[in-house]
Amino acid sequence: MKIIHLGKFYPPEYGGIETVTFDLVEGLNNQGVKTDVLCSNKGTETKVDLINSGYQVIRAGTLAVINSTSISLKLISELNKCIHQYDAIHIHLPNPMANLAIWLIRPDCKVYLHWHSDIVKQKHMLKLYAPWLRWLIKRADGIVATSQQYADSSKWLSPNMEKVSIIPIGVADRIKNISSALVHKIRSEHKNKKIVLSIGRSAAYKGISYLIEACKYTNDDIVVLIGGPGVETFSDLIKKLGLEYKIKILGTIADQQLASYYAACDIFCLPSVYRSEAYGIVQVEAMSFSKPVVSCDISGSGVSWVNEHEKSGLLVPPSDPVALANAINKLCGDDVLRNKMALYARHRFEQELTAEKMVKKTIRMYTEKMPVFEKNKPAIFGAERIEALFNNEPALSARQIQQKESAN
Image (cartoon, rainbow, N blue to C red; front, side, top):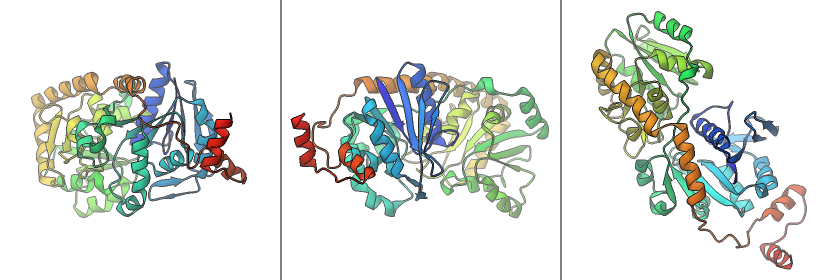
């Protein structure tokens, strides 16, 4: 079995989807499933990286990024060149460019969709894109949903449950990455304080502004550390509210330091307020370090499945700074409750949310899902037409392709 994963980007470009893709690809290769990666490059150049784990990452040059979508014709041509080598393609969505590539090439291999999230924000673009997305779902041999809650609430997945496998996102256990010196430094900087850690981008759905407002109501012996790309933009709001003594902006935390920040905190907070937060991988990371979580009970999201209320942490209504503050105060002020939830959080991680379990369930899907698409149907734009497109040669029609295949 040989698989290629198709995603937007791949580490060292980091994000939630990129982290999942990395853990899956590394884990699959470690389990003997030969797996490569095709993704977009941040620049116009196409690069091929050979990874020490024994696989390759093809980074196709990008012309531009529009509505969070990388515009890359090279992604299509690179996929067309290599797809015949693979038994299956595993596509991480949302990714309209990958959808276009599959629609044009019409590969004969199995196609699996990893449904990280519906398209929520770009509603006007979705109206134009919807027909291609429906086609891709129909074409798919299997679909990964990260939680039953999200699958049930998705208008795209709920009518196609016969194709859906529920595979929760798991993360690698990175306890060994903790630096005791850095943990000591972080705790010393906030001596006699309970430390609340929050990590996320500055996107509106992440709810960081609500966490900042919640700090008006948190106890004075609590400090909130906020890390992530672009969070420096909240500095003015913190100053305006006079909360500099309660909040520290960390900016982007280096990957090699992340484990130490998780280890140093007392609790973790994910204040996301909209369904764009489909799962909340940072919750799982915090739980792997035995940290209780405060997060929001977002309707139709997997966030509240990951963080079990009053077991691994506390859930509060979205967009409610007072409720958020009360939950933080409760956990920080009750050592017995906090320690009890910390033990359960680690237990839940070990039982259901490790990268190893995610990888094993993915392999099971590869081996059990049967094709549901008519593979021999002639493509509208098959490999011959794509090759002609990039070589400036006359394109064969679908009928000509079928006649050519019959002759062979």
